[in-house]
Structure formats: C-alpha cells, structure tokens
Length: 334
Length: 253
Image 1 (cartoon, rainbow over the protein chains, first blue to last red):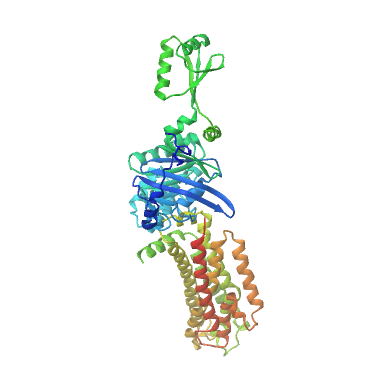
Image 2 (image 1 turned 120 degrees about the horizontal axis):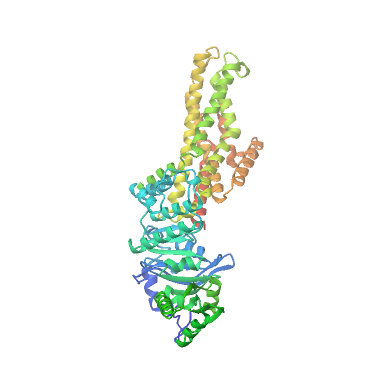
C-alpha cells in the first residue's frame, strides 16, 4: 500500500483510517489507544499570525522506528518538531506522544523524550563535560553517564575543552549527546547532520542505527536531503508547504522514487541484443550507456553477473535517483 | 523543592566563568578602595574635625550607589543572567526539558537576587572595614569616635529591597529581548529620568528612583524600615515577577 494521502472508495484517507469512533474516549481519557504508536498527530493546523504554516498535518510514528521527516527548507519541519516538544502551543487533542495528549501531559512526555532543535544549545563558556553536567544535575542523572554519551558521540577526548572552540560538527555532536543523556525512549532531531563532514555524517548515521537496533530507541529526524533519509530511515513523512504529501515505509517511498540504473558496457550491440531478448525496458543514453529501471540490489547483482556471463564487459553500474523536487512532482502527480 | 535545588545548582554551574558574580564583588570592592584612598589622602575635603566621618562616607556611598551605580548594576546582572541563554540558543532546549517553566524562571530570578545579596553584603562589610582601617591608619579623622553600624546595616538592607522593582523590570526586558541595547538603554533612560524627576513629589512611582531614597533617609537619619519607596519597590518586584512568568509561559520559541 502506498500511503499517499488519497481517498479510498469510502472517502477515507488511505493513510489515516477513520478515528471518529475513538474521539469520545480521547476527550475523556486524553490518551490515544494505540500502544505501538509513539507519535500521533491528527488534523493539526498551525498559524503564525494569519499565515497558515501547517495544514491538516497527520503523522503516525511507530515505536522502534527511525522516522525521517523530509521536506525543503521552510516546509514546516521545525514548526512540527517544536509543536511535538511543546515549544509552540498546539490545539488540544491534536498531538499525542506515548499515547498521551501533549498539552495535558507535557512534563511526563518530555521526560521520555530527548531533542536537538535547529542549532545545538550549547554554553560556549563551558566545557563539553560541564554542558552535560548542567543537564545531569538538573535531571538527577548519574555523572558516569556523561563520559558514556561523550564516548558515544566521539567527543571523549574533547570533554575538557571549551565548547566555544568546537567546530560546527563537534557542536552538533555535543547537541546530540545532550539529547541522549537522559536515556530517552524517543529522540527528536532536527537536521542532525547539518554542518558535519562526510565522516561525521556516517558516524551519526551509525549511531542512530545502533540506538534503534541495540537500544530500542525511536528516532524522529528531519532533513531536507532525501539521500540522508533513505540511508537510515524505516519510515518517511514528506512535508511541503505545510502539508504532508506522503507517509509510509521506505519501501513504499522507493516505489515512487523511480530509481533507475545506468549501465556502461564495452559493447552497445551485444548489450542491446541482451536487453531485447529479455524484454528489459531501457533507454540508450549514449553509445554504450543504458538506462533501465531499478528493482532491487539483488536484481542488480544478478544482472551484472548475467551480463558478464554473456561476454559483456561492464565499465560501470550506477544507481540514479530522483532529486527531491522530482520526487515531489511524482508524489503530487499521483 | 529537590528539583528546585537541582536547577539552582545547575544554574550556578552555568554562571561559572560569567561576570555576574564578579561584578557583584568588584563594584563594592572598587567603591571601598576609592573611598579609602580619597579619605586617606584628602579627608578634609569631605569632613571637618568633629564631624561624624561615618556619616560623610555613608552619604558619599549611598549617593554614588543611589544615583547610578545600583540601578546600572541591576540592569547589567539582569542582562547577564538571561544573555547566557540567548547567546547559547538555549531557551528552546530548557523549555523542552521535563521541568516546569516556572521553576526555570524562578531559579534565574533567585540567582540574580543572590548576586544582589552578595553585592549588598560586600557593600556593607567593606564599608565598615574601610572605616575601621582608617581609624587605625588615620586616627585624626575620628572614625574611632563614632559608630553607626546599625544605620548602615538598615540602609543597605533598604538598598537591597529598593532594588527589587528595577530587578524584576529589567529581568522581564532581558528575557523578552535578546540584545544588549534595548534593555540596557531603557534601564539607563529610566535611571536618568528618575534622577531628573528626583524632586517630584510622586517620583516613587518610578522604580529606578527607589535606591536614591536610601540616600535621603540616610541623610535625615531616618530609621524607618518600611518606607514608601521600599513598599513600591517590593510591589513592582512582585508585579513584574508575575508578568515575567506570564510572558515566559506564553513564550513561543
């Protein structure tokens, strides 16, 4: 099922089933009776003055998933995140975390949530350890946890250095360390790889995967880079101009994404005959470069082996993806 | 209460290596050093033989503090405590913690009140020490012949209370605005306005005039503790404390 916001025959959203029968219980108990859902947002509108920033937002984030919140700058990602953290006030009974209504259970919800919003909040006149110590003292967390999280984010050698002298990437890591320190069940990260070098991006990616797989955390992260989201996320929500365009699993997004392969071989003729025989839809890009639909990594590997077996030398195989803009157009057109 | 103590402790770590505490000590030390120096070298400019030198030095102290130093000191510490959060982009992080906003706000005010307390304790102690030291080094001035410790203590206590109104207002402005210019500019402007209007019968409605009332009371040897400026200052203090909290609770970051 592709969870694009399309109405099915009954007039209901294919993504978000009818919940009207639950409304009575919500208003009475202020809870959302779906235990597997860690975040539920229903029909959320948000205005800044007269300007509508979020338009009928619906989100469902499952426990122990990495949910990528994808959208261009100014789409409403940070506003949504700020609402999830209670920094901007949402209307009543629209936002539920851990099955509880946010406005009425703010403190309890926040005690189970770690966050990094926009630029990391770091006291530049203090060391990295002192920055974490402030939080540890405030929340009554054991001091030994400070060294642990510094180790996790790769700052154990920089703990005694003043945070003001840190590079952007180090500050970002310290911000993530602050989000991890209270050992939250849900970690909300707004553009966590901003300012990181490629090595740093890979480290953060591995860290997030390990938090999900080894520690059972749920991660909600925003990004404007599709390539970033698809590498680690299990689920995706796409937002543009305050509206959710798509929500579903990564596989469902890949189906929309029109990923294709570009194969360069030594012989145009032999390759053409090979593809024609197997009725593979292809486009010839240049003399010996072909563009064909991508199915899966396994299928690609099989194709390469088969081509070689048929005496065709392969110079390169490249997986090509749509840009975010192209993906948006694809989604809107559907 | 435990949580409040934890936030207080965390806030003290945060203010480590900032200037709030330093200026709370440095200003009284500088004033006392200058007073000692001036009285040691040229006491006859201020006091004739037989006059109570404690009164002369006290008048001089409360004059400097009441006119400009005390209001501007409060303007500065209120800015400093909040600028730590503004500059580090931390309000959003603090308010996304599982801690009631009121406690975060109240602890910040408490730290500022603590600084003001340190300022007053140093002012009182150093004033007495300066006089005592002069009584040994320059017995001809006559510090040893008089004792007004009680009046000085009362005046410094009143000075603390008359600072509460300014503190709450400046705190409010410094949370509301990120920059240095607006809260400090308004603080300076209102201090000057209070000074210009100091002879106006209703000047006590301007909180920035309250510290100066300590000078007037001291001059007249008025030992009333609950004076109109003290009452108004406490009233403004409470009013803007609550208004500040209302603003913080509605603050969207």
